[in-house]
Length: 172
View 1 (cartoon, one colour):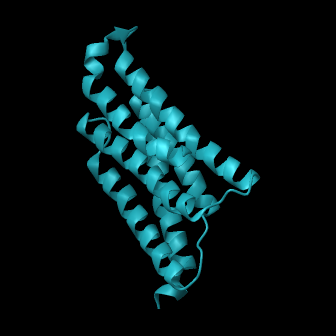
View 2 (view 1 turned 180 degrees about the vertical axis):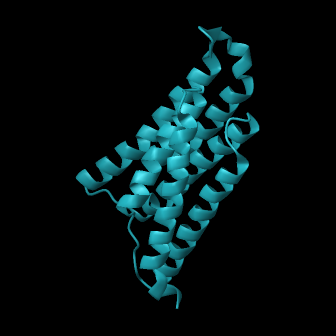
């Protein structure tokens, strides 16, 4: 349910972004951006809560294994594309991030067809946390956001290469 809530929060974030100018400003910060940032934080926290609860209560399901990574990708990609539209983030970086997600997801599908499960790596988790922090900073126009997103893109490429190297046997 938490993973599905993440999917349903995406349109809320996008609508807030669309009408954010109508909310006004407080001390130079758009109230709409603050609302979008808050909803993004809530959606991001559902990912951590979902994983924690599933592991603690032994509630790992096939549905959860399927929807959780998709919900993460929908959330991050939708917001990144919106940030490109708002001219806060370069499109080429989004293409790098999306490409890595397709490559890793494809590798996981090949592995699953062979009965192998490729768990999330530590590098992949660090990449995700860095992306989320950077996205929050971009939404809220916090200085240094692009430096964090550069780190996220570097970690994205690095963790993608790590997955491909570790899964190379499956591809040959």
